[in-house]
Image 1 (cartoon, rainbow, N blue to C red):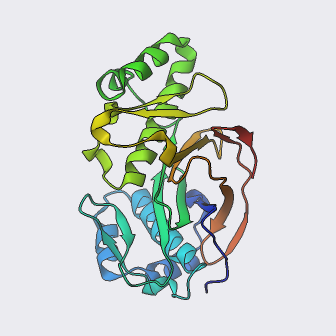
Image 2: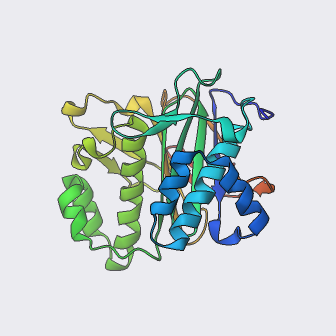
Image 3: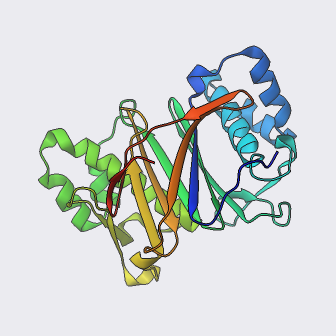
Length: 263
């Protein structure tokens, strides 16, 4: 327990592929980690695959957090802020750990930081049909113009670029859809660079954020938002994990403000 050091300049990303995790003994161990509230919520999912995804998600976050703090996976306590974002229960951990979760068909991600507010979003590009008119309704005007200016074959990819970045930002803020998606705008015209601007009503500044986007697989789109000094250098580490079993490095090509890198 608590064997991995983490400092304020590091962000760790943990990925689980639920379709690859099906050993009965392991799944039983996951069940035993959940509290009663989580077990009740799992049973509310109608489809078995969603119950399975939820089970792996809870095992992922509990076992990951226990790698940083001397708390057993089953003993973690969580709460939600007033907008519904899950957080570690106040005063239940000695470290200022922050985490954020996202899941989609075939992949789950847990992002962890020490003190920095973070948000992560993941989408399965191949399994989600999207009507691009959603962009007209929710995106900033400049984003819509840029999206529509692209060749039709590129528009869906750019939609997911914008969508995951927007989701990661509002999750990092902790307010979710209480923040109108059209009140902040991303500029992705320059390859390898992510710029963001905010309407004055949000009271936010690009200098407070570092933004990343990448594809851990050919079909999955991921975006990460970290609230910190934009001049601060962060180290990102990605790991593929089977909770309570084994792990391996996950190579990802990250696109961020200063270009492309592989951590």
